[in-house]
Image (cartoon, rainbow, N blue to C red):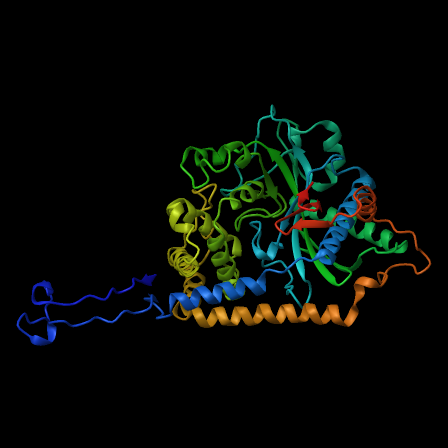
Length: 505
């Protein structure tokens, strides 16, 4: 970590103490002034002040500004995706009619959920997209609070489970039979296990069918579908809307209300969010993601996810720690991704653990981002050397248990190179962020697409079909002379907010 500031003080015969090199009667010891040094990182020699400035600069280039035009484009893309999912539901009535999606800022590759990244194609901001989101779409819901949360973990590693459809009614079983693996018991009973791989296959095919149909009858202002790909169990859709390209990683999940028994002991511990948000907000629900353990069966095993809880916990994390986390993620995301080893989600878990371990007033210091960055790197290197990274919600689950000694040490050595010169690696991350922003600006300048019809639009079709535009028109009529704008929180784009003067609603 950082070396403390050395205070200037006058030496004296009486102050030499037990120094093995001091001579009490040596006149050179009298009135000797020890110079004041800037605060340094002991390991690399980097100045803490310089690291803080580099983190601030990275944050400036990494966090995109959202003007009114971009806000409208975000909303248009979200509305298109949600409408598409409504059409998927109508195809064969598999998806719940009344569904609750969780929309997260950042793609799966950014570590917003705990999924394996080795099956995902590489997309780069600036080259392939400008904004990225993860959308969790429940294929099944267990939201009856009177219904016990029962998971079959007998065949799975910790944090994983099979899901038997015995929990559901006959109609649900009949709808999803083709997305299940079947186990026949000796007593003649048949058990259907919901298969993450078969569900993802069905979901991709259904989305492809719907998008093909939609593109046959384009409407003015409709986003252009630039790419639809299945990456493992994630369906990645890139949309061009005006001057923006947006990546949606759509993940089919199983949604539960309540809290799983395997994570019950976590609630008994003290946490950094105690007193800041209520326990009801934190344990409102969890998911099963279509991801399996290294030793599990891909066709049957799901992974527990507490993404809904993490959204709430994020509210209690200081901005300086979040900046350090984002910068650290940029330093390691490519360096440690191959061979399969470290996901940004591991770093997110370490950040949550640090919030429990360290005093809140320490973590809230605005000028401590450099300390937090160096500490996260140290924590991650410690995890690699010991092959131990506990899941924050289920600490008995070691997320690095599958690593071989060779892979763990390879990544620890790579991380050591970052730790020995963090300033240089931050400068590289800043240049990459600048380059991505330049690519986005070049696209905007080339196209000025915002004022032109969508490439998929029919020039003869001049009937706008935009609910947001209609809402704005209504607000303008009802509030003459007032300033009206649309605000979308980049961390919660699940709904737009209209502002009239200084009031939001």
